[in-house]
Amino acid sequence: MTASGPILLLVEDDEAARQALAAYLDRRGYRVDQAGSAHEAFRAWDQRRADLVVLDLGLPDLDGVQVVRRIRREGSTPIIILSGRDDERDKVDALEAGADDYVAKPFAIEELNARIRAVLRRAAGPDATPDGRVRVGPIEFDALRREVRVAGQPVALTPREFELLRVLLSHRGRVVTKGRLLREVWGLAYAGESQYLHVYVNRLRRKLAAPAPGAGIDQVIRTEPGVGYRIVEPDG
Image 1: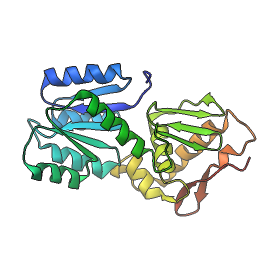
Image 2: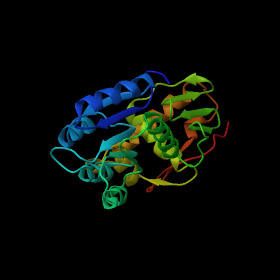
Image 3: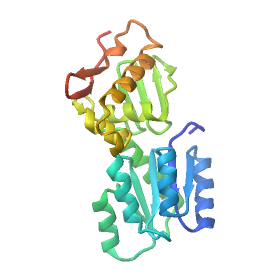
Image 4: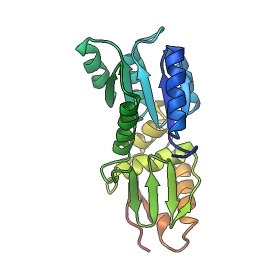
C-alpha cells in the first residue's frame, strides 16, 4: 500500500483506541480521517468522501445506526461496524440500515484489516480480481491501492472522478442511470444535476484517453441518451 491508498473514515469515541487503530491503518497504507462523534463524522464525510467507513455504534451524541442511514442515503460507500454490544438486534439493525460488515469488540486488528480489504474488493464489483483490480482493455482500476493506470501509465483522478469510475465499473456492461450516479457519487443534493454529471464524465473520458491516444479509450464510457452511462470494452 502507498500513501495514495484508500481513504478511511474511522468513527470511534474512545480517543486512545481510535488513535491506536488509526496509527495501525496508516502503517498499512490507508489515509485515515478520524471522528469521535456522529456529528464529527458527518462533517468529515461532507468534507472528504471516504472510500470506506469504520464505525463504532456507541457514539456519545447519536446512535451509530443513524450514521449508517445518513451515509447510505447519500451513496454506496462501504461501512464496517465495530461494536462491543452483545445484543444481536443491534447487529441486525446496523446491517439492515445498510452496513456491509460487523466486527465485534474485542477484535484482532489483522482480522479487521482483512475485512476492510474484502469489503473494498467487493465494492469494486463482481469483475474484480481477488486483489481488487478491474481491467477494461488497457485500463486497470486498483481499488485497494486507489490507483488507475492506462497502458501501464498512472492516471491522476480526483476523488469524485475515481468514485465515478468505481461505480461505473462495478456495474460493468450495464446502464447506470444518471440519478443513481449522482446520488452515489455526490449525494441526494445533486440528484437532479445531469449537466454536472455530463461535465465530470467528459473530463474522466479525456483523462483515461490521454495515455493511449487513438486506442478508443474515450469511448469506454458510453452514453445511453436520456438514461445514463455504461462501461464497454474499447474498440481500439
